[in-house]
Image 1 (tube, one colour):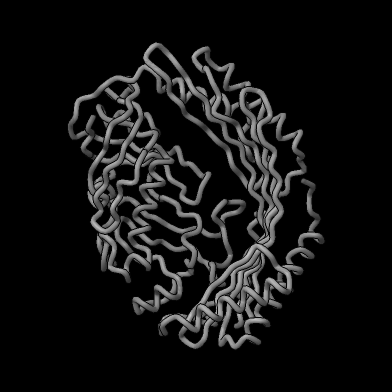
Image 2 (cartoon, one colour; image 1 turned 90 degrees about the vertical axis):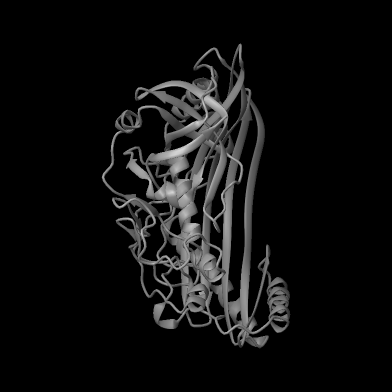
Length: 448
């Protein structure tokens, strides 16, 4: 995949904007009172390797669009993986047919015109990687070799993958908004199996970045996958009881995401949240602020406008433990009698802000308890807040790692867990949309 010049990038964005204009014009011809469309062009290359042999080479190049039309207060949506004139007419027609058969909803409609972004900062999201399948294969082979050679107890590979993705997306609506975003995403992952006399365990590691220069060293990724798999050998049983639980950064990010699911506009207007009507209430420990930072350079969750073209902005949803705002797009805001927060499509770079401690200090504070490194199952009920999931991790005694554990269950309630956070680690993981460090929960039920 070759690099794209600034001129070539502008031409690609302009070409997609022209197609978006054709789609909106077709919607007007079909009788839509308003319309919005998102058209995306993706190009990607990925290579899979297992046991030092090439397994897969996948190349994709796709152009498709989604269209939402409004017939007064009625709404219809359709999508297609084509962008030809015939596909545009057929897809717009399908959306109009749906709209004419749906019920009127006064909350339907485009975002208010005065909320649409008129400018946004450059976010430095586009960093093409001049790499071909042979080069990706070489990186994958080296990553797997590093993992297999890390320890004699690494006995197998579940596969290694390297990839490079380049996309361009244009959102446009009949209010005249047109916004284009070009972005890249490159990554590598490695999964291996370790074995000893007691059995086998698997684990993995990965790296991902907008800029290929910011990927972790591929051999180090393989070694980390192997280290984590070996660390899981020698598991022992533990005594069921109530213990402190330390979620590692990836698991902590999931915990924060559950909170944001509960404060989303959809959960609120459907009355399907354990945090109903919670504005102004304490929803997390008093030293924690959960803030959106949508304009971070090169970050995976950065955006200058949301899925409706509304300008994004830095804001705190939870300020020192108290809920300051729900997460709202235009529709959910209207249902709740509020204003959009510029979050149609979700949050953009959610950052856990607080004083942070080294991981060793959190384990010392924990004394005896569980470090969670993996969660299984879907036992999270956002209506009641009840939380019960399968888990694996490291048992800690005297503030030091003692032995691995697995096939256990951890249980509590999300409200109690988030209010019961007693410390956050400085080991922040920025490989996703939630930037969180390890989180120490005062107490959960840990059962074998």
